[in-house]
Each structure stands twice: as C-alpha cells, then as structure tokens.
Image (cartoon, rainbow, N blue to C red):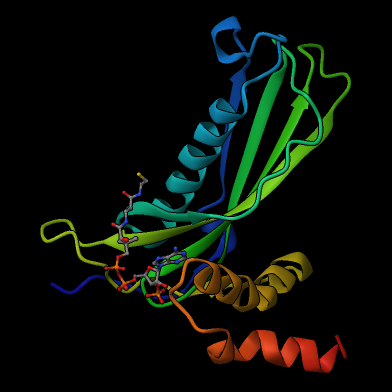
Length: 178
Ligand SMILES: CC(C)(COP(=O)(O)OP(=O)(O)OC[C@H]1O[C@@H](n2cnc3c(N)ncnc32)[C@H](O)[C@@H]1OP(=O)(O)O)[C@@H](O)C(=O)NCCC(=O)NCCS
C-alpha cells in the first residue's frame, strides 16, 4: 500500500514541549547551557516533522540560532514547533522558545530557529516524498512564502546549490532592489 501524502494543515502537527531547567542542565553561571536548549529544540522539531510526514525523520540542518536572553535554573521553558513548508522529501520547521519563572512571571521569548528534516523510508532509510503544507493564517502564509529563500540560503551554504541556481533569492533581491 502506498503512503498517504495528502496535504496537511500546520495545526495538525503543531508540537509543544515544557521543561524545567534543572541544575544539571546549566553552565557554571547557572544559566541553561546552549547545547541543552539546542537538544530540546531538535527533539520538539523532530516530533513536529515526524507528525507532519508520518515517517521517521532526521535533522538535515539547523539555521542560525542566537541566544539573546539567559534562561536561569528553575525557569520553565516552553518550546513551540510548527511546520512552515514541505519540499520534496524535506520539511522546514519553525521553533520558538519562551521562558518564565515558576510563578509565570518574567515571561519572555528567548529565541527561535528553523530546522530542516528529511523523511526516510523505514526499511532502506532513503528519503521519501512528504505531504505538502496548507498555510491558513497570515503568519503561516508569510512563513510558507519565505521558506524557499531560506532553503536556497542553506543549500548554498552547505555546498548543495550554486548561487546562480537560487531563483527565489534572485527574484527577492530584484523585487526589493537590494
Ligand atoms: C539528510 C540526508 C538524509 C540527505 O541525504 P541525501 O542522500 O543527500 O539525499 P538527497 O540529496 O535526496 O536530499 C534529500 C533532501 O535533503 C535535503 N537536504 C540535504 N542536505 C541538506 C542541508 N544541509 N540543508 C537543508 N536540506 C538538505 C535536500 O534538499 C533534499 O530535500 P528535498 O527533497 O525536499 O529537495 C543525509 O545527508 C543524512 O542522512 N544525513 C544525516 C542525518 C542525521 O543523522 N542527522 C542527525 C544529526 S547527527
């Protein structure tokens, strides 16, 4: 039986994870260690991608991540991941990270990132086609529209695409007279 890859709404795979920062998650300053946060981000994005693709997925790349606001031991960290767009065998996932203290005060956004996952066939572990994304809200549509440009940047930076092949980026630069 062939796999169902009918298009899916973003809400169908939205994934949320909540963690409390424990002492063994921190660096010597008592802040959440960047590597631990990246691990949680990777996990929640992988869950979201797996749900959307209904397949096993692997992380192919992570875009730039800045750590703008320190997260303290005892803080509650909430990670929200949504799919932005599907390509042929890969999906782009957007993750936002929020932190607050245990009483819910000092609630703030700490960072965000885009992850790319590739869906693999169970037996031979080869990339397989993924369902398209149906963007419904304005922000979902914006992220959907801008995804091809981000994809071209990461494919160029990873040496998988020549700059002259990046059609969406070229169009964007021309339209915006950059
Ligand atoms: C990701 C992986 C499956 C791609 O395999 P591949 O043989 O290069 O497959 P393809 O060339 O068919 O590419 C498959 C998809 O991956 C995408 N891709 C590959 N490398 C990428 C990168 N660096 N950034 C973004 N997308 C990438 C391709 O664009 C393609 O997407 P598309 O079909 O939607 O256009 C393979 O490189 C792999 O297994 N990497 C290790 C993954 C892993 O173990 N991650 C955990 C971290 S240790």
